[in-house]
Image (tube, rainbow, N blue to C red):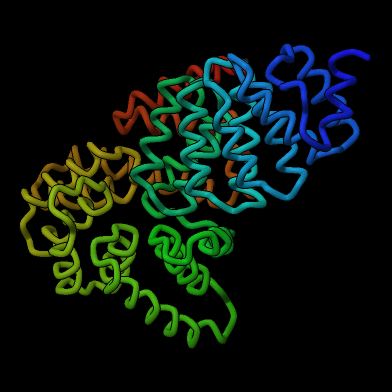
Length: 385
């Protein structure tokens, strides 16, 4: 009887032959045999020994994770998938599996984000990794992180099609499944500020757009919950942006000013800057308004709202040519936003729509986006006009 045969007999009790004497090929054959037979407890023991014995335990970690996953221990499985050495050709696939578990059955999305970052670090060309990270930041309303993730993807030449839609929609992100997604993720950590904030803001958006007659009464209750969160997290930009936007819509200048005074020092959020410019405009301080609006556009040049406010500012300053140019850009951006909101799937961006976004980006002076879209259109066999 060979070494493997002896080891099989001894696995149930104390082995007289240390498994450390096995070769990688012997471990591999035994793990494959136990996996095929779905003997998960035995596989876990052998794979754990192989981890200790191997100089490159990548395959051993994967067998160990497989055994743990099939034994109802997904968190341990994830730990071992993340231990697969990054220099192994199996590492990226292990990270994919770990990420799918974190965003799926174990519901650990914040851990999933860290795994996505490892995936992008290891393989910057992975479009699906960038796409998943961008979507997470978008649906949790972390617009600045979303924008940074989009431009990281563009630099890597791995931006997903929906990234361009998110760039146009970034001035006010809202998703039909946003409340549901954030409610689900909140279960993973009921005290997570990021999910609490995104959940209530998107719930209010959802109720405000509802045609249900009972929505008005519900809205009052949700706004109360929103204000309670605002008191709990006074510097949360998602909540601050939402509160400022609502006050500006009501032309409550005093409230807008009060809220803007609560913005953390050094904040360079383009929407906050745009509202600061709007406030200066309402106070007839047009030069200051222009400066702030131009600063907003330097942070995010594709915000049609900022171009619209800048056009009004130029008119007041007597810069009629600049006002007309800014107004035309604003009209184009607003139309693109409306068209994108009508798409059932953010990824369903046609070549024609992509080309128009590229021309809009060029008119805004956002060369990173226009150049990337030209590259993408050529890759699709389309010649941009």
